[in-house]
Length: 348
Image (cartoon, rainbow, N blue to C red; front, side, top):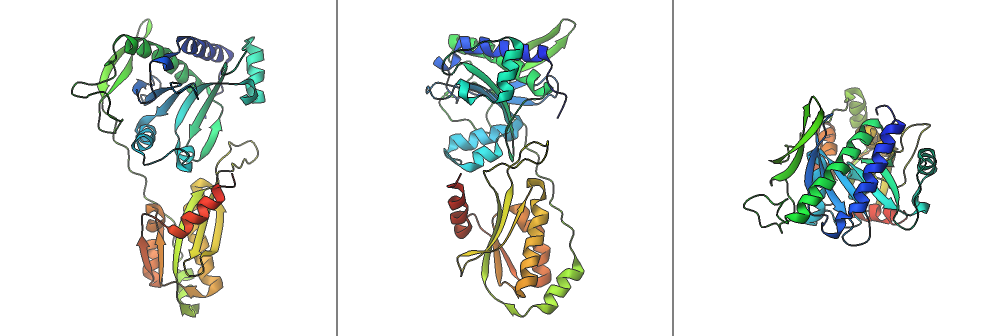
């Protein structure tokens, strides 16, 4: 996280939000009217959508990079339906929304008071937040504040052009009614640095390819595996294993809150978990290995098979499966664990 926003940066952001709200672009734009704005500080494209046409949420969302855009595509394709927890867990975006006063945090009210601003009425109070994968909404830093300010300002330009020309965001050869995808051209506002500051041009661009995830690597304790193999008294059972985020955030000291991950090993015959581990998102693969090995040690049992869904989990368990000679299968769905997961989500 960079330095916090200065008062002048906050003033600029609130002014840009006020101008954006006054324009009320949601009267003629829908959330499927997606366009890009390049961040002049990083070169990354933020993919923007204006919310409010349905009269429920009034906001500008700026999804960062191709990974952020992919989430939008998954939502429009129906792959991630409304209310799917994966949307909350995987969002990577900046958001400027207009809410009721009761929705503000103490930090928001203190800042508005310090800036000498006044708002009144429903959906009148600006709230600015950053979402990143595995974390709930959080306050902006200085760099995010500057980019969201530019995004609001440039969205006004795009909305005005779109109002005059309904095909402004539709590339040649497209009808304009197709849902967004990762192969289409998007109109992107591109900054050009000059002696007098930034000027902006329009370009049609395809989203950049998403970089594949880094290979998962967890140290393998060969001696421990050999001890497990020697002391095993039985081989039986089919199990499901997966890790998923819980929707109740955890905060440690002054750190940013995060969604903890629960790793579960469930016995298909018993229909219940037999081993579990609660972990931070970035530690879930190490905890996966530890939970599995502890179960082997305590039960003196090696399963006939373990079925997983995640490629990362399969990657770290593959050498264990080879050493201990159990089947490791992958499946698109883990019925037992999905039932447990949905039951837990219903409590939040």
